[in-house]
Amino acid sequence: MCSEGLRERYVNPYTDFAFKLLFGTDLNKEILIGFLNALFDGKQVIEDVTYLNTEHLGSKETDRRAVFDVYCENEKGEKILIEMQRGEQQFFKDRSIYYATYPIREQAIKGEIWDYELKAVYVIGILNFALDDVSSSSFRHEVKLMDTTTHEVFFDKLTFVYLEMPKFHKTEQELDTLFDKWMFVLKNLARLMERPTALQERVFNRLFEAAEIAQFSKENLYAYEESLKVYRDWNNVIDTAIQKGIAKGMEEGLVKGMEEGIAKGMEEGIAKGMEKGIAEGEWMKAQTIAGNLKNAGLSIAEIAKVTGLSEDEINSL
Image 1: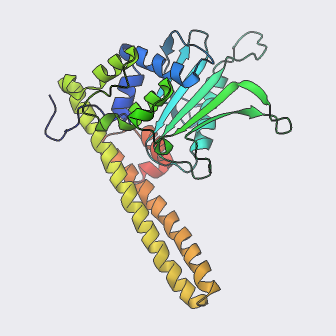
Image 2: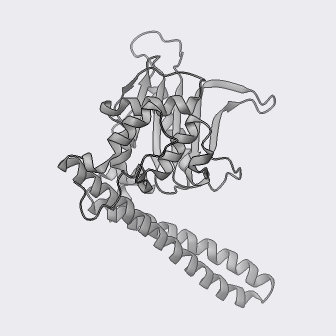
Image 3: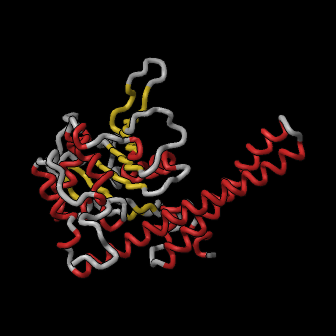
């Protein structure tokens, strides 16, 4: 049933439609549970999950909305929030902490005495980019509140897991753990034409069955094609904006550097010019992406989430 524009056998999980299809639907709950258990690696075992509303408002109507990719709770009532971040966002860590406030605040018991006891909250970010301010070569980062003197975990009910997918480089032959296999699937699924022999666990039966484009209904195929188009357009816009920003920055830096002197002036001018040019390129990129996503029919809230622009800025485009 693949259209002429689709040559792949399996979906690209970085598209909004595919990620929510695989991990955010009751039909494929087994896939989400398998991924989470591999992620936690025995620290806890999840037997079931219940999907929760992914769209949240603040305490007032005027507050900013938050739209999660996947939001659920396990059988113990612990909240799990998963974000697939397809493009680089400067303040993604800030956003993930902001998002964590929603599953924390909604646990407040209204109208009766409450002792403030909380269920655990997990925020998982699957990032299709490397974090600028993280120098470690490790692709996985697990973050908790820590006592900086003793280096011991101070509070174990709030956990952030960041997965920098570009830093995962293992080949099929190097997959040692079940979690390695999940990372391999997320990174390579759209490029696979056959199921790798290393991925024989039962949970992958369901994943590859659900991810096969040829089995889609006409409605799902159309929705996936639209989501894939937005993803590809987005990547092209980002690449173009970055290149323009770098080129303009280098040009302005060279001019300023020549004016200030051949030695120190040039060095500082290039740095300042590149910084200014890249900043302008990022702004152009965000506006162009917002315009494309707006034309594609995405909601203002979803566009704000993707680009970091305010809803007023998006409405003015």
